[in-house]
Image (cartoon, rainbow, N blue to C red; front, side, top):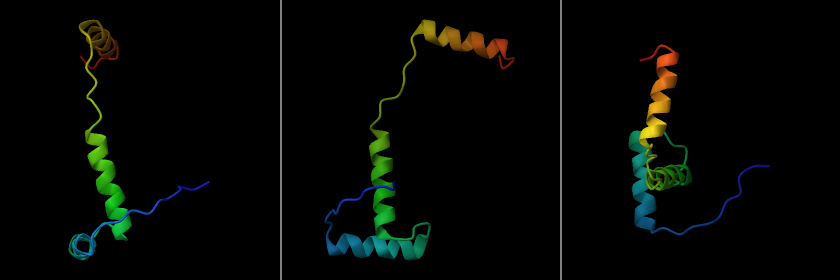
Length: 70
């Protein structure tokens, strides 16, 4: 089963800018692909960074020492 899609609306001006960006920069096959990439990047930045307690950090250091990395 593949991905399911929905339709979104953006201004023609923004769409044209996205098309021009793709022509100049490459890396995307369509405006839809560019939009999905940008949205995923923005949304992933919203995820909080994992903060370890001192105890958790010490356990990680112990594991790294046991493996010879520290």
